[in-house]
Length: 177
Image (cartoon, rainbow, N blue to C red; front, side, top):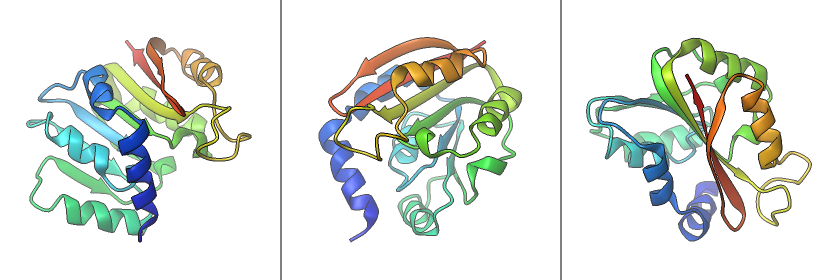
């Protein structure tokens, strides 16, 4: 059993990903980075909407990269990047997506500057994170509550466009013009 089996089960039960897709307002020619893509679930989902664009599925875990590779055979608009997000060189994207990984990023300043300096405008940043008081997810001391995340992004010039709470998680969408 893969560690991603539990993630998949949790996502199916508690995260309304179809609503998140609607909120992301995906366009046929979007260029999106799926940061910390895990098992590739969201990259695959995005590929159904982004036919003429590109999905960069960024993942450093070799086990996950293997899963994504197997799931995306023949899908031309997904490019798998087996790297740590603290050294990315992708340019020209207009959307970036983080599903329960932003709290783990050790180089947040680098990632925020990377996003700001290499994206097209308007840029949409979509983040799913665990609520601080949630019994699920990582230890409470590394979780990022909505207000902390909002401070991080707004202090970098982003504007909160949307916030929604779920049982254990929340989704925030920020825009940079």
